[in-house]
Image 1 (cartoon, rainbow, N blue to C red):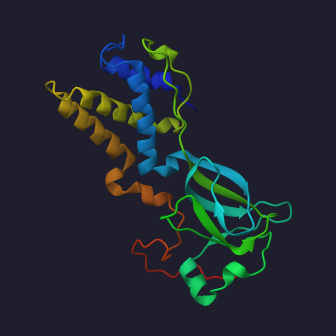
Image 2: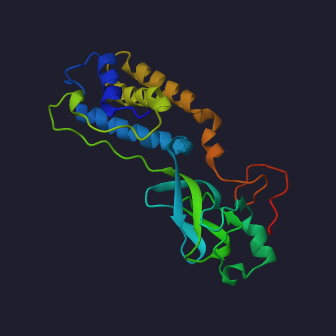
Image 3: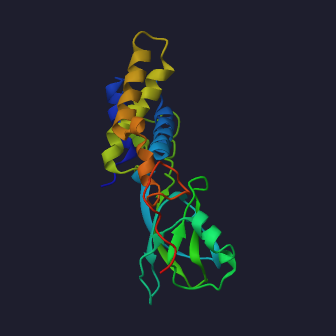
Length: 238
């Protein structure tokens, strides 16, 4: 269920006992909220998971939708005649076994996809796609910024919902409080409060466990994403 941005900011102004938003204007709270959503996306792109059916362009290289930040998975073909599942494979192996695979005849039904996290907004398909090909994918969508209200407004003037799922609302509040107290770190105790809130934020997101890696579309042993796996790569073919 979506959570209104003003509700999260209300929790913040109550926690800081600044309900009239004198010390921290509402515009600042909104900027911290927007920064917090981007920070969550940096560490947990799966928190902004979105499904879409995309039309392929002719060729092997495909792009995410305009709001895409990182590919999570390519699930299946999505044409009227084909719902065939699509498997990830290694581009390195395909390049070695079939160096001219980018030049073979295109098809409307895709068999494999390849992904390199160094280019997070693109992926490759085999065989090359025709313009008739459609794919159902999951990707991490860039969060939509909340607009700042007019100067002097209180939190009730903030419009819009969070882009992140409701289970991350508490983590987002911790990030906002971290930024709020960091602003006043010269005052006794606020530096420690800022650190405590960021630690709570980091712990909730599993930053110390590098949880963001779990959102990468990889097969075990995929050389395009080396993480120490030892099992064989999904073979190229049918």
